[in-house]
Image (cartoon, rainbow, N blue to C red; front, side, top):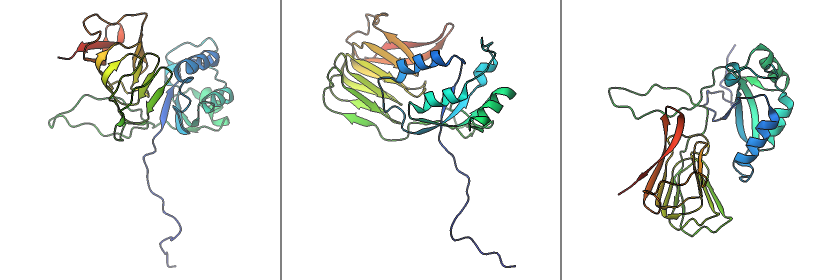
Length: 250
């Protein structure tokens, strides 16, 4: 029998970019409150992004509900934020069965993207197949002042602002944020969890600073040595966990 090459289709391997939700609690009411606080004022943060739910953190904690997850309610909550849950990993047998019944596919081999320090020629990076978004686009550039109530989000890229960010305005980026003017509003870098993201401001007077979900608000005043000065903000690990470090640039 002669086998001809198909003319109507091909099947190939593909790297499929996903975002990942690391679920740390089965309390969906608490999850809904925190999702609202984090994303409630950014309606276009997600745009039908495919999602894998990672249940691994639940296995290290004792849940008051015994680890039972209401998957239909969880999926409805995530879909309300324009996320598309398609897979699950890291759960126990009962959780994985319930997830499958809710229509999720098992993805035990899904790898999460974790920032790595730069490697030298003597220490090549280990290859893997990360399944979360990375900033790969050119920077978004804003050259007009941002007034109170205005918001700019650089999805999947860095953000460069060439004019003042007034109090009450908000700049958000999945990558770095550069403000070559006074930064008096809110700045959220590494919005999708990139802990390597940084914030640079020509004059730092921000109401709120955040990198990869770690926040610093007005309730914790800025160090006097950086207020009004060119400053770099980065996230570092310390004995008490991750914290934002501000360094004046000369």
